Length: 116
Image (cartoon, rainbow, N blue to C red; front, side, top):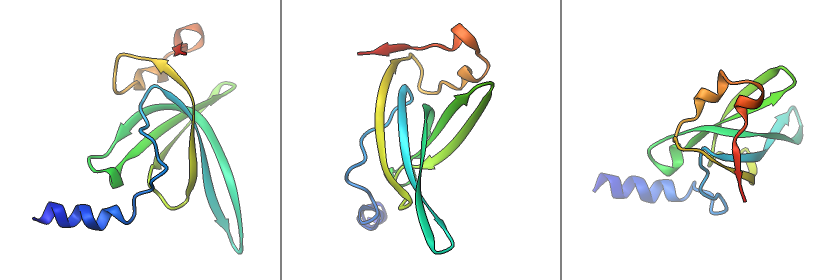
């Protein structure tokens, strides 16, 4: 009974336009940032290396972007009100749910095969 009540309450906060995001996808996330009385949209493009969360409202993704010799990882809550939209750009072929092993790989070894 409690789980049904929790699902009803959480349903009001879920975003309908969010697709299923997996670890083998390259995504671009548009996040709204409030700075004082101004708002702007910041884009973050990268590879999803991990997903977590049991319920849909707790669902988080870890996105990794490599620029030059630096790598940046950010954790986003999928159904956060600050996230405007999530675009899926490409999908890759992997055999694991968690591809954090890609952190240690560089150069040709860090390439993934794209699924058309």
